[in-house]
Amino acid sequence: MNYETRMDSAEPADRIVMDGRVLEEEALAEEKGSQRRRLFIVLAVILAGALIAALMFSGGEEETAFAPEEDGTLAAVTVLAPGAATLEGTINATGTLAARREMPVGVVGEGGRVTFVPVEAGQWVRQGQVLAVIDRSVQNQQAESQAAQIQVAQADADLAQANLDRALRLVDRGFISQADIDQLTATRDAAVARVRVARAQLNERQARNAQLNIVAPAAGLVLERNVEPGQVVSPGSGTLFSIARGGEMEMLAQVSEEELAQIPVGATARVTPTGSSQSFTGQVWQVSPTIDEQNRQGTVRVALSYDPALRPGGFATATIASGTLVAPRLPESAVLSDDEGSYVLIVNGEDKIERRNVEVGMITDDGLAISSGLDGSEKVVLRAGAFLTEGETVRPVMAGK
Image: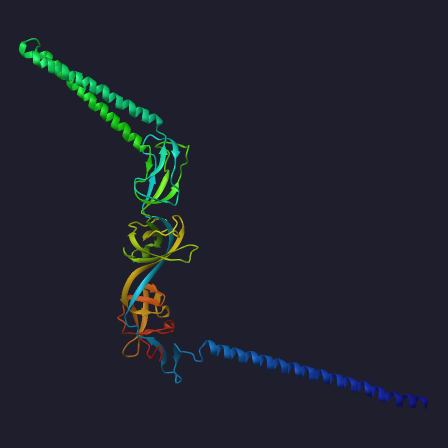
């Protein structure tokens, strides 16, 4: 009796536990379903965003460069008739700035101790202007001595002439022989010659003294000053001053062997010193006649007018005009190459693919100039040439239509 009572009382408890488990499992299932729904929503949003971005980048439509027709019979190929245009080519180069005509100035005369240097680097000087003065106290005394020697020689010459004149008056009377006259004449001539020697020595001394002043050989800009007062200089002292004649500057631009042949003398160039936003217009005045064997480059010399921003020894970049060319121009995607060289694919009058070998000329920002192989009226395959075969029949579609 008691056993049955216990059994009846335990049955509702088991049912309660079972109901709780059922409720818990249903809650978990519902939560998992909610998570799946949220995941599907997130994926749908991401997919929609990707589609919108793709449409925005593609402009809302996509150009088909090469695609088969829906019936599978012909391929639609985008073509371009390039025509002919006048192209201006440019070549970019780097190099250093320098004086176009740099004049090194050193000691011309005997040298000595420098007493005065009146110029500084960066100053303009005129032709013949004194750059440095060398002490000449000893040389001045030598010049005075040479001047005195002229007076001595002149006195001897005057005495010899007087003796000759007296002898000539006595020769007719028989007091003086002809041999004596000849001797006196020779003495007079020697004295006159010594006068000329003394004068030449004085002129030489004065010329040497004048060379003690170091002067500017031409007007220009002083680039370097390598001497100070008190310094002893001589002909072996090297360069004391460096002058840019007329202040003219230039850029020594280094270009490749291929580009060197495209640059004519007289071409315009824009030079920009490193670290400066200012550009200067120059003109090519010399193209190197030789090529460096190590780097296969040549030098193009661009003449520039003086400007404080152009400092010799500085680094600069240049954009050089390489001339004009009337030729068809194609984008890089239209020009292919293989072992035989560069070529393009064109669609002939029968709508068949045909290979045409071409030569590429100057390269511009807008494409490649075709120097030979095309006249501009052909229908050139714009893209996807690698997927086409020669002789294949296609349906040409003009670019932009």
